Each structure stands twice: as C-alpha cells, then as structure tokens.
Length: 325
Ligand code: PBG
Ligand code: ZN
Image (cartoon, rainbow, N blue to C red; front, side, top):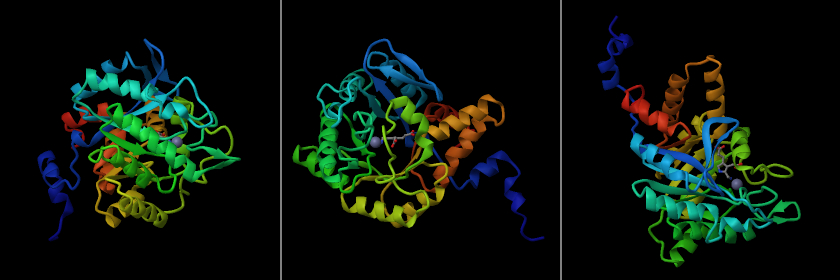
C-alpha cells in the first residue's frame, strides 16, 4: 500500500502540523445583553450561563472577557420603554448608548460592536416601522441610520445592522460619512435567515414579533443563491465585513458567500445553537466542551474569519488548552 492516510494521524504534534483549519482568539466576538436598572445580573432562562447586565454590572463581565483573551463584544440593548418607532434605539441616552460610554471608560481594551436593529425597541417587535401590517423598508432606513449614528457617537467601534431591510448598508454608510465617521466599519448581517434558532434570543431580549413573523425580510432557509445575491449587494453598498447567521446549520452558505466575495466573513452561532448544546451537555447526552470546539471548527472550516458566539469565553480557554486551535 503506497498511500496510507493514517500515517499523518499518528501523533498529536503531527496532527497539529497538518491541520487545515487554524483558529485563534483574535477572531472571537461575544454577544452581550444590557438592560436598564442597577445591580442586575439576571440569568436568561433558555440560555444558562448567559445574563442580562445593568450598566453598572457590565464592567465585571467585560474584564473577565478581556482577561480570557476575548478581544471584542457585540452589544444588544433591552430598553424599558418601547414604542411604535423604536425611539430608544436612537436616543442619545438609550441603553446601548449609555452602556457604551461606560464600557469604553471602564474597559477600553475591548473592541465594541453594536447590533443595529429596531426589534428590541419597537412595541410590536418587528425590525422596522409598520405601515399597516407591513414593515416599511424605506422609512425604516432613516431610523437605522439614526441608531447607528447615535451608537457611533457613544463610542461604538463598529456597527452591525441585523434588520434585513433593503439598502440599509448604503443608508448607514452615507449617514456615518456625512457625520465624519468615514473610518467606522460596517459589519453587515448580509445573510440572515428567518430562523427558529433565534428563539432563546427573543426571550432574552423580549423582542418576539407581536404578530406574524420575520419572513418578509429575513431569508428563506431553503435558499443559498439568494445569499450570494444579498452578499454582493452589501459589497456594493459599502459593507466592510459580511456575516452569515445562523452558523451551525449554514456551513454551505458561509462557504458560498466566502467564494463569491473578497470581504472578511463572519459567522454568528446564535442563541438556539447555544441552548441546544447547553441542554444536551447538562443531560450528559454529549461532551459539552468537545461539541463546542467541534461546532466552532465547523464554522471556521466553512470559511468564517470571525466567529460570534456565546461560548467565546469558553472557546478562548479551550484554545489556550489546545483543545481547538
Ligand atoms: C435582531 C437580532 C436577532 C439576533 C441578532 N440580532 C433576533 C432576531 O432577528 O429575531 C439573533 C441572535 C441570536 O439568536 O443569538 N434583529
Ligand atoms: Zn431585529
């Protein structure tokens, strides 16, 4: 036998030498929920180990992340007041804006990304303003641009629109540029599917739509050519980084978008992925740590350069320990 594939699998050092996918902590972004009030650190029911933090409690978590070597966080806001046009999304003293000012002061070594969307801020829970029962695309663009601008003014290093309105990357880019923020990058949730994997997030943020669903703006999970269409549009509109979301069930989509564009690729391992692994881990049906590593490697192998995950802190540790790397 001339060819024995097993020959290069016989020791750990050899396996590491021939490894095709290498990952490191610089690619990790940790999603984080901030809410109004003080002394709050409340666990999210369907996401054990994940918490909603009030602004005063946030720095402790940020320090822990920075100590673990996680370089970046993505902030989500949970406002007390919601209304039809989501005005807390673009209020100067909105929850994310206040959290950013404090976080940048307390923990300036982290890189701050903010999610730009309306659904956490609207009383009806949709990602834009309504005209009747329809989410009005072009009216929503103005609010998204205002939200992005106010986040950047409060200190966001990068904005990440997740609403899936058409034309939002251009609208945000133009608004940031007009206000002098020409160097603030936009990471587009370019390819975001209407997914049941967001269930735990909506519990965490109280952002489930009050009626209907998000299928008129988020993508149909049967499609992949449409993912390339969305991605190419966002490239034209000035996106700096493209994201595919969810990650776990969408490796083919990550790969397709990676091959069709030349922008850095992010993959978002969403709340439902986290919840499933935690639940199965708790039951001892799976080895949780090993499944976390294997799932992360799958996203990188599919083509992700950046990985957003609620397991970022654990993954940083596993990378240190050489369990993935
Ligand atoms: C806001 C937003 C959502 C997620 C990220 N940004 C929820 C949604 O679209 O319903 C989901 C993240 C997760 O499930 O972890 N539009
Ligand atoms: Zn939304």
